[in-house]
Length: 146
Image 1 (tube, rainbow, N blue to C red):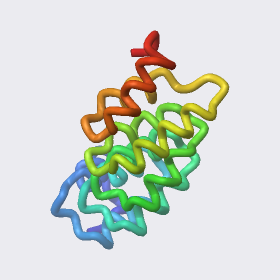
Image 2 (tube, rainbow, N blue to C red):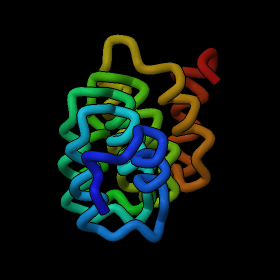
Image 3 (cartoon, one colour):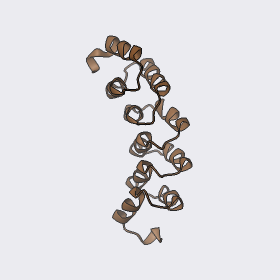
Image 4 (cartoon, one colour):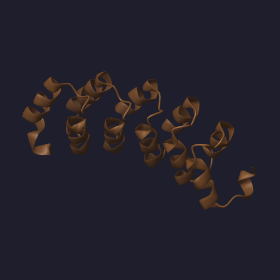
């Protein structure tokens, strides 16, 4: 598969395809366009090392794609929890793989912020894995954000 001669649309389609070989996903993760990298970051079959590489990308949309990917390893999700950009933290709160322990860590990070991310708090609250006690604290401290 010659990626250099492939059109943008074709690369994006290949990056999203769950049957794309891992070596091709590795190559596409290095593409110049963030939309291609984001598509690789969303692909549930992207290898963990590639997801870790993409989580360090400059582009916040790429990081958001990795944060939402259910295949993203826990150590990468934990790094994304403390990202300054609330959109990234919100994406972690939406990740179906995120554990209640990680949600508590995300809540603690939000609470440490001078101004917590409204959508991060809202999505934390809506996550069924968040312990009930934390939901009560969120209602008490941030009820206006819900």
